Amino acid sequence: MSPTPPPSPFIAGHDATLLDEVKKRLRDVPDFPKPGILFKDVTPVLADPHLFHRVVDAMAAPFRGQRIDRVVAVESRGFLFGAPIALTLHAGFSPARKPGKLPWRTRTERYALEYGEDALQLHEDAVARGDRVLIVDDLLATGGTATATQRLVTALGAEVVGYSFLISLDFLPGRERLGRDKVCSLLSY
Ligand SMILES: O=P(O)(O)OC[C@H]1O[C@H](OP(=O)(O)OP(=O)(O)O)[C@H](O)[C@@H]1O
Ligand SMILES: Nc1ncnc2[nH]cnc12
Image (tube, rainbow, N blue to C red; front, side):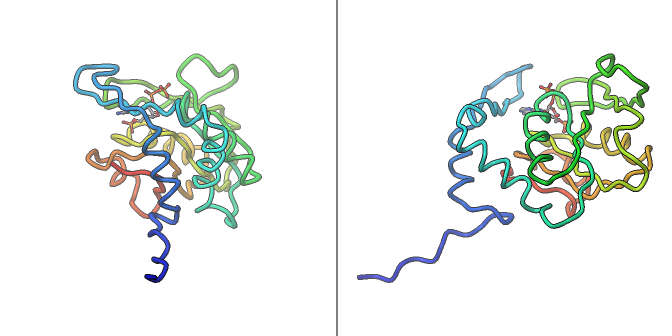
């Protein structure tokens, strides 16, 4: 009998079985929301409680054992991952929202998307001076959204210690823009 093969390689610290399962479950939707965009639909991952739980744990894993005071996640898909990651890391959660949604005093940043333009707002007390912040979103593409979020956080005097994404589209410049050493993603395309 041949010896047991070594365990599958770990990619960015995550087990390859999980990555395969997530890959299989993500749904590619061509030409949404515009012609030429291949949209990565995460809803089938959310619909599987066991897989969703493992994904949240894996997205939090690189930041366990570090002091994270606040998770800032981006409306709307970022909230789906950011809130459970904040609970997992025993950190507070602050939403970065599209304009006109936050009720109190806000800071605003405009940014460009793979398929348009938008702006984000953060409450002025969303992070405190000196806080160590993790930025979370479902997907990194051009990096416009995450860069705008980083600017909002640092303008308030907090430090962005890292970014956690489920997916990064590495044929786009997002990872380079944010700094390779700060970006964690389960899957890269
Ligand atoms: O790296 P970027 O080029 O900035 O793109 C990534 C952003 O695009 C998507 O959000 P979208 O604005 O479509 O909003 P949604 O989460 O409300 O669907 C995605 O959830 C990221 O936030
Ligand atoms: N290709 C894509 N799929 C899903 N969300 C996105 N946000 C930006 N680009 C995207």
